[in-house]
Image (cartoon, rainbow, N blue to C red; front, side, top):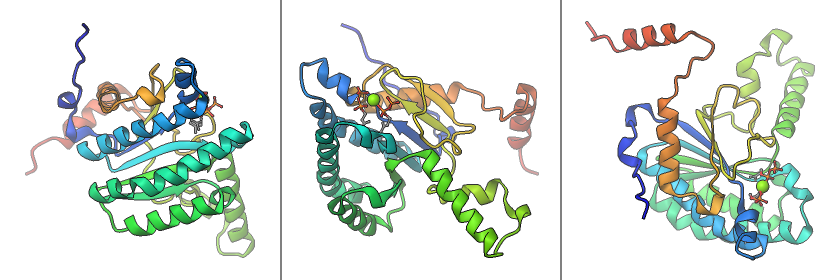
Length: 261
Ligand code: IPE
Ligand code: IPE
Ligand code: MG
């Protein structure tokens, strides 16, 4: 029997990624491997959502963003799209207790208007009920596409310019970040994608300019809390240089940790 390493104890809580984003992929393949329909995989993916959410909250991650449905996913067979929308509706309603118990605030990013009315209503209710929760913000990316998000931001900035509220010089990093759906969030420090696919699939293109990327072969329904902790441990082994040299980073670390006079 192979022994599973427990990663939680190895996490350095002084160096947690403030924001983790996850591309939850592989539900269909997981179901197919057992001779089941793809939808069976989506249903079993809900357990992994709970594992990741509770795991993040438990160790002190402040923001978790889960990619649940992309703008491109609308092109899937109609039966799968409606099953996903129904599952989303049921899950949001069912998970409210877990969110309240764990003091987690629900947030949604994406083209919400394109979702069925029942889903919009359920989302609104849960967002309202959890708006004062402070431990962690759980963001669901629903009908989300980073290119659409950038188009919307560009339109908003162009309108502000046309109405003479801003000048060309006002268009900077901050202005663009503040025009995105994620305006109140830090950029993700760590992005995890399951199922062995090594791509971004139109997720947080602007926000992930300096995100650490972590890919695992695990399929989403089998992704556990320990897998999440393992990804965080690997993240903590990395040196985030942001264009600087390793020497500069180490020097900065020493200066920041010198005893205060
Ligand atoms: C991710 O699993 C869930 C959604 C995109 C909604 P997939 O449904 O993409 O599963 P695979 O990639 O086909 O295995
Ligand atoms: C990305 O998964 C979107 C979500 C996880 C919601 P996909 O399975 O749709 O990605 P591609 O199309 O294979 O890249
Ligand atoms: Mg997929």
